[in-house]
Image 1: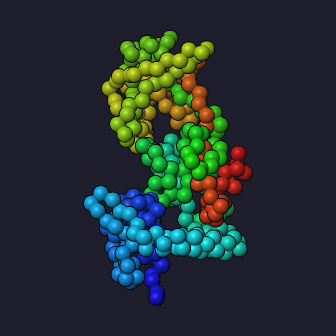
Image 2 (image 1 turned 45 degrees about the vertical axis):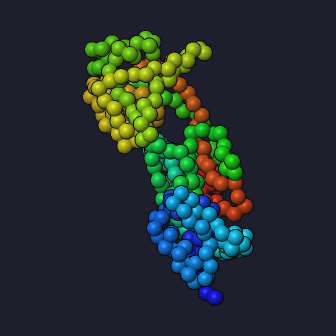
Image 3 (image 1 turned 90 degrees about the vertical axis):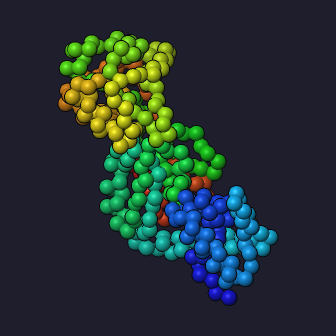
Length: 299
């Protein structure tokens, strides 16, 4: 009996994910295509692999028996192909990273050009978003996060600067007119340029000095999407529209040029640098292994 390997991959993806929608999200496919692939696999095999209801998809007894044999076999195939890849002069394949927009702007530019120059046969796909939750969504191989707390079966490697700060700044013209705050609490009287995550959350502005922590829920004339709207907020601050709170690296060009002036710098909050997350598994795809080694080399 012959069965298209692509149909087997679809069956395994649905079985692992526990449903068509979740499998589609993980693999970057769509639910209807996966459903059709599973249906065709069942037709060719002559057995039902999944029991389907409007609320759930579960393996049948036959399906579970097939998965017990099929998953180890397919893992072995992937391992064999990866072993072959190691004999190439350079690793090849696609590497998909899920990262915050800030990492795509502040961390990856110092790494990616040299990485791609060293490994010309690797295609790097970066998915940058402001509402980062699942590192491995959309079939990503690894991700970058600013929290070193590990999920189960995940490894983290330092990437980029190990300490960063949130900076507060405004144009000299704005501060000459509105005054220079001496304490974070005075920000409630200022025009603040704020950001909002894709989840809808507008984060507080956080400060710390000599053991005193201050959290301020600011207000102001501009609210932008964290990520895509950041440049607009910076331009507005430079034009005198208010005070901005952002990664220090993001504001550094404007600070160094004098277009923006530091505000309450002794209160700027310091936090740990980002981490590269990837699954804790025996087999690591060659493109990801090359990237991990390159990041460690750059550290």
